Image (cartoon, rainbow, N blue to C red; front, side, top):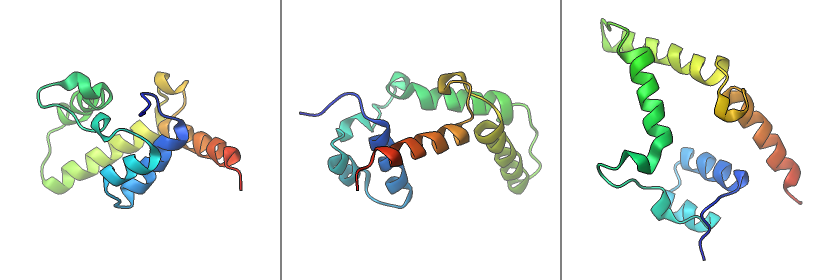
Length: 116
């Protein structure tokens, strides 16, 4: 039976392997995660509220307040915003940590839990 809650270890494992190019369906199967929870239904933003919230912030704080002169300029501005979002700005949902610091702490915690 598939669970509805996933451990931090499962989530970090899936994200790292997905970034490396492994197929999501295979990763979900390996970690015991239902792949149905990964995909969104068209027209249902509540299926992925975290991404919808992120997209809103990106639009409101970056895209709508800048006049981009070129594609390269847009990339530079977005990268600056992304660095601020991930490395400098604390997030209340992460206990007032930056996403970067939260990932480091969670990765260290998961490595301590692994039995060799």
